[in-house]
Length: 350
Ligand SMILES: NC(=O)C1=CN([C@@H]2O[C@H](COP(=O)(O)OP(=O)(O)OC[C@H]3O[C@@H](n4cnc5c(N)ncnc54)[C@H](O)[C@@H]3O)[C@@H](O)[C@H]2O)[C@@H](O)CC1
Ligand SMILES: Nc1ncnc2c1ncn2[C@@H]1O[C@H](COP(=O)(O)OP(=O)(O)OP(=O)(O)O)[C@@H](O)[C@H]1O
Ligand SMILES: [Mg+2]
Image (tube, rainbow, N blue to C red; front, side, top):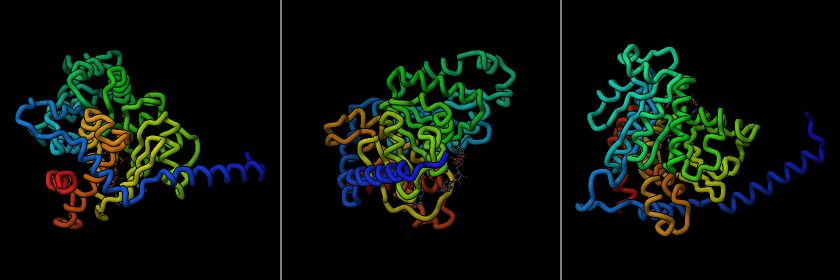
């Protein structure tokens, strides 16, 4: 339907005002160092009196027949950042593969896909117990929820309807227990189908890439993204979702909780290999837990989730920068993961 000139002018005026309003709240580059200091404040001290698990037990929900790298990258990144235990809840076809990548991950083959292309378990009673009529996939994960500090939902999940139904149940169970959730990749596909799943959940962080952001924005705000106003777009999406924290990844990462907008422009590189976003979401799982544990006094009144997200963005980009210095065009996400320790020390332990 064509807009009347008056209506169009009012909208344009509103857009200008909104932009000015959001820009006032935009984080300037000179604030980056102050925000990094807030990230440093939330990092728990290493101590000989702590027991295994205290610094983080993180779950990654993801991994299907096609994608085994993404959940591995997320889960191993959580460990490398400093979590004590990292679990992967995946489709059974993906489990042996993920286990073979790393003895450090605890892998649960509890999700299932339509048609039962689930590898070794597809014909046995475990798979039958997880048939689409059964809530067992959710039950299996729910058993672990009391022992987890945060969930990262989506890396390498795929978009199988039955599998996404499992994940919907897992998200509902996590919300009921007030467990923080980072939602990435195909988890965002699910949220775009059903925004009500995370609407208003204050312990959710969404980490869309360019395409995932457009899809979400369109689903929630029923219109295309204004590409000239990335800050305003992220602010508006967060507000429309009831102040859920949104991290739009890109040349500069834009972060908002609907009240504040932060920009992370930590130097990375021009190498864009797949899997970098998985490193970010896995790291964020740990940092969200640390930030919520530290509380708002350690973040100087800023949202703990925004501070955590800023930390994960800075760390991912610094890993990319360091890996690129060594490997140039052949840099892969595994090279970036090898840099997590040094990047963490450089940014947060100075
Ligand atoms: N080794 C693995 O197992 C990996 C699996 N992955 C999984 O692959 C699945 C699909 O993820 P995708 O990220 O491909 O999601 P989508 O299928 O939504 O595709 C995103 C698309 O957007 C494009 N894009 C990204 N940034 C853009 C920009 N700035 N401007 C224009 N286009 C841009 C990309 O080329 C890609 O085609 C997810 O489950 C994901 O976790 C990825 O995480 C990569 C690594
Ligand atoms: N143009 C860019 N310049 C610099 N850094 C970028 C650029 N685009 C993305 N990044 C960084 O790369 C990381 C991953 O973002 P990206 O958009 O590649 O996620 P993704 O598509 O979800 O990745 P994945 O392949 O893991 O799914 C983020 O830390 C982001 O800051
Ligand atoms: Mg991704």
